[in-house]
Length: 402
View 1 (spheres, rainbow, N blue to C red):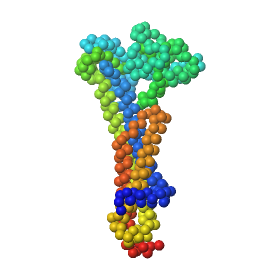
View 2: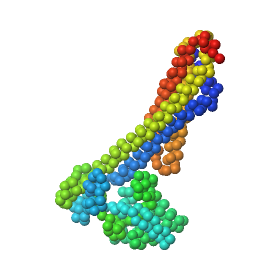
View 3: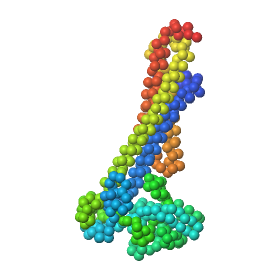
View 4: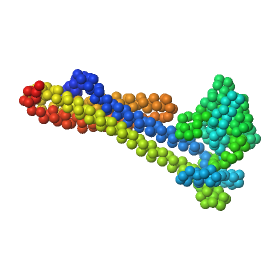
């Protein structure tokens, strides 16, 4: 019997018991779909977290933070060393430094005559939109003159503007943050769903760093951002500035460049997500094995039902190898069809998760290929015993079987 005839015979057998074949495929179908979806969502979550961390890095910018923020454990606010004006003045003296600024982060309450909401507040320089990777969709970004003059101006993102003002134009409206009235001069794109927005919330207001410091004097400055000229060796310049700051503050290791800290976070996130993906994927793999046991069970039933057919084929000259291959092809075909359909469902689930949550869902080619190959392997392993049992039947006993 040729390979084509075996495939045709296997398809005919599956169609003759369509409901039973479909239910047998179900375990493989669910197992493969689970693996594809879990790996895609896991990689998507890792990508979202890493992209959030990467967004903190800006080209031609050095970020210096107190070492307490990097050290293991959760430091108390009073234990975190804060930057002073003399620290900023010192950093400005280095060749290659174009500008030195600070950013402030925190949560506050924003109020209108009819609304009161808890929001995230970012205070920074006039190019905070470049640092924070957000676009101003209406109105304007505050200028350096606004920063120098401590002007009471603010930008809010689209979701916050919708909650506060509905269909009204928010530009020119007055809101109160920290008990101080501020004029809305611009609206930014809503914050994308990511790791930080999940922690701090997606409703955000942006204002000049000087204004933010006036409103919230207790928010210590725990981040120094240094803008360098193009072509400057950032690594060397960062080491020199950090060393000078530590000497200036008479504390060895008081400050450090945040790039190593961010790389450490990325590695940790990658390790954790890989472990979680492997653990959950292994659980889904157990579902595949359970599905394989179901395939073995059904193939044993099929061998029993077709005992006389096997006897007739043997009496007409079919070899034991041909009988074995026929049932083995049927077993593999069940698992491959179930695996193929499972891959389609897994991709669909990942796409739905991306559409609903906004999180990226990266379908991995190795997960697709691996799941499909593993399905075939399960078909071979779980179909080998029933196929071998069919091939070892005695033709005379098989013909007498009722």
